[in-house]
Image (cartoon, rainbow, N blue to C red; front, side, top):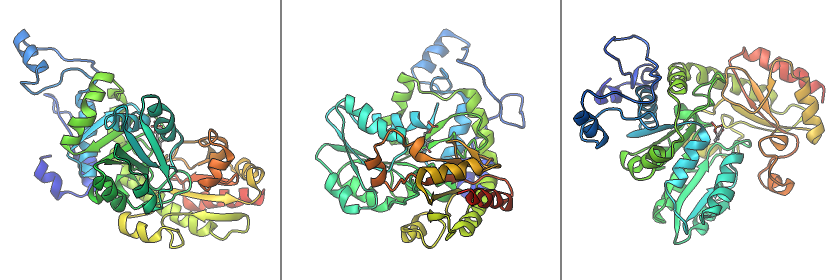
Length: 396
Ligand SMILES: *Cc1c(COP(=O)(O)O)cnc(C)c1O
């Protein structure tokens, strides 16, 4: 598919065709190139390839046809000039941030972060002399006030895990750019189908491909997308020289996962909307949060920057941890685990899993009560999902 063809096709079409490379055998389905490296006809050709004087693959730590197909398909979907794949979503976040900073620099991030992202920013980057300020992502003034002369990167997830808060990407991008910093957005919850941070002004988008992109709980993977310049200035060499690389096998699984992404995510999102509407106002719930509902606190931002609400619904069960555990133990169909975006409906209790590391005060500040659960709606029939949820709520 040529670059001009890409512009004419819609996401569903790109997900099936973009980035496909064919070998001399003209295989129909994308091939899995399980090879660490490549053979050269002559020593001169090898020299030229290593020097970057002739195009071609060199070493699968940073270039492999299957990885390349995945990256190209992701880039076309995101509308990004360039993409690099990584072994996990956390490798994508870590590379994107480490590529932007050096000792003495400063990062501003929203404090509502996936647990490991928060650790990377506060603990890990701190060890290398990179300071950070965590702000309430909803508060535009707080982003502004956090800027220092040495601020080089802004980071946010939106919608956030697990409270599904939504932040104004365009407004934060403007503050970042005024400060001479780059904005990196973790777009996992919205998926590339429902939110395009680059078109809203973000400089870089990262994904955990482990979630909706695989969508069937098989492999881990990640992806970093940005302009060609951003990738070459901040990402390419970090991956090439340090090796947080995606395996060709996982790249192949993710590439084939992309073919069905829109079908899965659209169905899951429609079901999530139905589930949210059915549970909202239920007598055993304290509150329910779904970015596709009009009662979401940031409904105005959602209307501007998201095309749909995603497959995640969070709700707080009455009775704190005890109430939540009774509910979770009463579920028959929905699995208790921490993955999301899967074909199977899955549910998580953040206080005792993903956000266990935080103090009760830190959790309270983020709105993560002991009764809060995060549901990832799968591909089962929505009536079966709702029946399971209602029966378990009876146990509370
Ligand atoms: C899962 C997740 C990650 C980390 O991805 P892994 O593939 O598990 O390393 C980062 N950010 C968000 C929002 C996630 O949901």
